[in-house]
Amino acid sequence: MLQIGDTLVSLDLIERFFLCDLTRCRGRCCVEGDAGAPLERSEFETLQKILPAVWNDLSEAARKVIERQGVGYIDREGDIVTSIVGGKDCVFTCYGADKTCRCAIEKAFHEKRIAFLKPVSCHLYPVRITRYRNFLAVNYQSWKVCQGAEALGRQQQMPLYRFLREPLTRRFGPSWYEQLDLCAREYLKQKP
Image 1 (cartoon, helix red, strand yellow):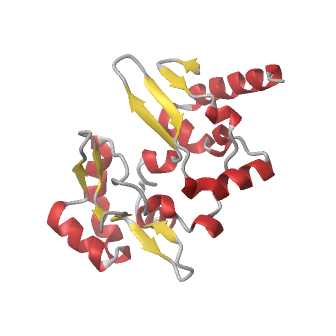
Image 2 (cartoon, one colour):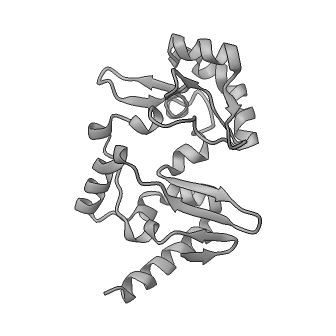
C-alpha cells in the first residue's frame, strides 16, 4: 500500500496493467453486478437534473424503472447507487448498433447536451474507493469481465494508474496524482 494524504492506494494500481477493450467486453461493466454504480449525494442530485437531456437515449424498461423508483436507490450497504433494470443494467445504459453497452450520460456529455461527464465511480472503474473513518482506500476490483482489458493493458504496457489518470485526477486533484506517479516510478525502479 501507498499512502498519499488521507488515501491508502493498493499497489495493484501500479503493478497491474489495464486498457479498456470495448470490442471484447462490449461494456459489460455497466450491465453485470449486483447493484448500480455508487453515487455521491451531489451526483444523485445532478442525475435528477440532467434526466430530461438523456431521457430519449434510455430504453423503455429503464424509463419505467426511473418512473417507479427514481435514478437511484439506497443499496443493502447503505450507499446511494444508480437504479438498475432487470437486476443488472444500469438505467443509464444505451446500446449502439454494434450491441456495445454505452453510457447515455457520457454520450450526452460528448454531444455537449450536458456538462456532467458521468458519476466518478464509473469514470474510475475498475478502481473502487472505500471510505473508512480516517482514510480512503483506493483498490482495484478485478473480475472476469475485464480480462480483455488486462490482456490489452499488458500488451500495451499501460499501468492501471496511468490508464485512469483523468478520473484519478478528477477525484483527488492534480497534486495527488503527481504524488502517485512519483511514488509509482520510484517503486517500479526498486522492483526486481
